[in-house]
Image 1 (tube, rainbow, N blue to C red):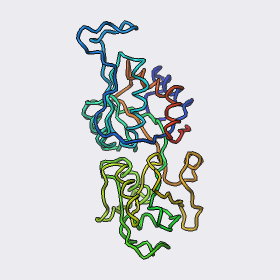
Image 2: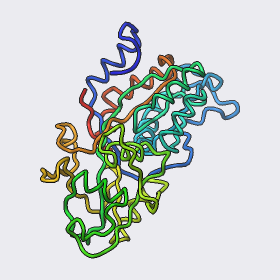
Image 3: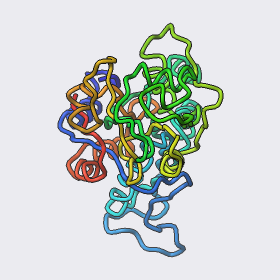
Image 4: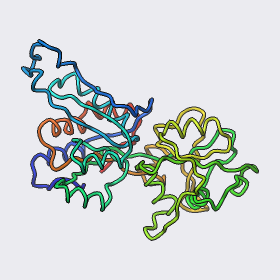
Length: 318
C-alpha cells in the first residue's frame, strides 16, 4: 500500500493494523458544516482530566475533505473523543479537492479523499514542502439510481456513458418509456464526480476526453442527488451505496453490453463483479506522529472497525 517506507516503525504499526481491519461505509444525514467533536476542556478553572492532561495541553486535529467519507469520519471522531480528552477533533466536508488543497497548504492534519491524489496535486504539495502519505480506509460502491417508477432495471457502462455525455437523451433509447432523461451529478470538486468521469464516462481510457453533457445538473451533495431522484421520474444519478435510501431504485450495471448486470454490494465490490467501485483514502502531511498517529492506529483497530461495519461502508480487503 502506498504510504510511509516499510522500514519506518510507525508505518509498520499502521500497516499491520490495516491488514486486520474490516471497514465499511455510512448511512445517515450528511453534515457539511464544521463539527467540533470534543469534551469541553477550555472552561476557566477546569481541573486536569483523570489522565493528568490539563486544558492547556489539548491538541487540535483538523480533518477535512471528501463528502463521501465525512459521516464516517464524524462517527470515528465522536467515538474516539470521550476517551481521549487530550485531542480536539474537527471534521468538515467540502469535497476531496478541498481537503487535499488544505493538506497542500498546511491547514489540516488529515485530508479525506474519495479518489487518489492527482500527480499535479502531489507535485504542488512537494513544492510546498509537504509529502502526502496515503492510507486506504475503506472501499465504496457507486450506485446508479433512478426513480422507482422507471421500468429500467439495468444499464451497461457504455449506455451510462452515452447518457451522461449527451448521446442518449430519452429513456426509450435504452428500453424505457418515451421521456426525457434528467442527468444528475456531483459538483466538479467532488472525488466521486472525478471518479465517475474517468471510469464511467471515459470508461477508464486515459486518452478519452469525453465530458458531462452541458445540461447535467450539478448537485452540491449526495443528499441533493437522492432528493431529486426521489421526486423526479425522469432523473438518473449516481451516489455512494451508503447514501441510497427508500424511494430510490438501484440498477444493475455491466462492463459489457450483454451482461452480466450486477447490483452494488459489499460482496460484489470485493469480488470485483461490480464495475463502479473505488478505494477511499486518508492523507497526512508526511509520516503521522503523536496524536495523529495514535488516532490513525485507533481507526484501524477493533473499536473503529465495529463502527464502520455498522455504518455500511464496504470492507477493505488488501
